[in-house]
Image (tube, rainbow, N blue to C red; front, side, top):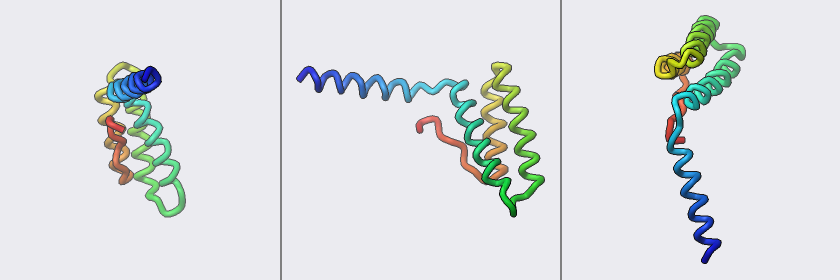
Length: 93
């Protein structure tokens, strides 16, 4: 019975920590997603102008997130991902 209670508390703690994603963490997640999307799109056949624009938006988003303007950074990352045809990660995942 004690083990079951311990497992339940551990699952509850993990569920709560996952639910509370900060804007800073979301900036990081989107930054990693955009890195991957740019690498994937950089293969032959991808539009060089889209990659260049997404990279420029990535630089801008990095600055926003570093300057504690995470909401603007998140929007900018999302716009860059959409430009490449990628759906931004969801906060709930």
